[in-house]
Image (cartoon, rainbow, N blue to C red; front, side, top):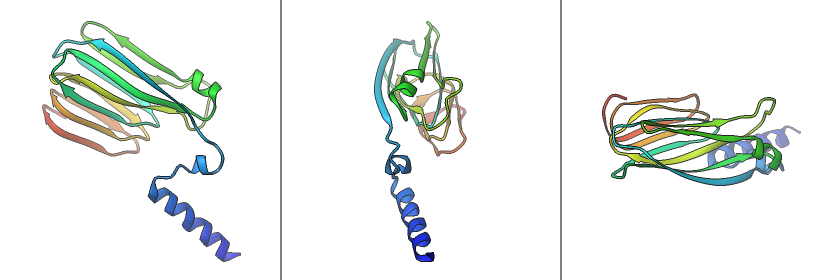
Length: 159
C-alpha cells in the first residue's frame, strides 16, 4: 500500500515538474479559444491588463497600435462562453480585463500576448497564477502577480 502511495506522489511530482496539467490527466480537459484584437494607441498612451490563471507578455514595437492575441480557456464550453474578455479602448488608453462570471469556480482564465507602442505607460499588468514578461518598453510599468515570475528586459523607466 505504501508503495502505491509513494509511486502516485512521485508521478504527480514528475508531472508538475514537467509542466503537465493534472486536470487533463484526471479527465478534466480544457476547452480553449484563441482571440485577436487590434486598437490604435499613440506613443505615450496607457495600457492596463488584468487576468487570472494566465500569463501576460507585453512587447514594445514601433507602431501606434495595440495588438492583442491570446487564449481563453475553461473546463467546459458553457464556462468558456461565460468567461469574458473586456477591452475598453480610448484615444489615450487601452484597458484589458478577463472577467470571470459570478458563481463559477474552477480552472478558467486567459493568457495574453500584446504588442504596444514602445513608449507607453504600463499602468498595470496583473495576473493571479500567471507570469508577466515585458520587453522593449520605454516608460513606467506596474507589474503584479500572486503566483508567477516577473521578467523585464530592455525596459527604461520606473518598474
